[in-house]
Length: 179
Image 1 (tube, rainbow, N blue to C red):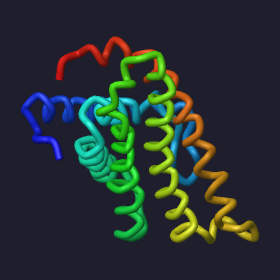
Image 2 (cartoon, rainbow, N blue to C red; image 1 turned 135 degrees about the vertical axis):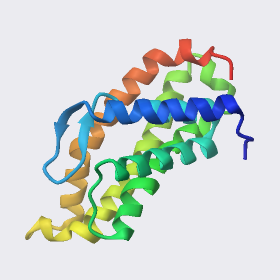
Image 3 (cartoon, rainbow, N blue to C red; image 1 turned 45 degrees about the vertical axis):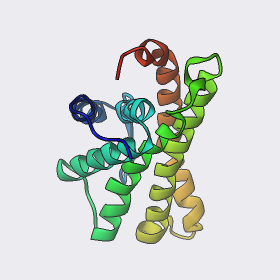
């Protein structure tokens, strides 16, 4: 576990605030929760890629708690825990390649996309499970797993594309910023 420096804590706070502001700019909002935003996960993903998986998970979980406190909706404590701090905490998985020397080579685009895929994939699994466990009745006669898979994909796949493209464009200049 990395020791949290003042610079790291300040950067985490800024990234959480920026992520929250970006989450308020919605391109598409699904009827029962979830939305495509102006890249709201990018600050958390970027923080995790810069500082590592552990700090990224903690920062993502803080972001999830903030989203829950400032307008999240839930029906049970277990569902709130799964869909906010755990789901957003898993965005910190983007830091899995943070100690890799490959982040500054031509292969960095592949590493960025894989980092974003792993992070958003973790979030996707949490929302998929919550959809099946807590919201299966909305599936009607359809299989709840298929319903939840389609529903979560409707906003998380566009979020993955937006995040991958933007992070690929901004990573090189931002990776030169001293930690």
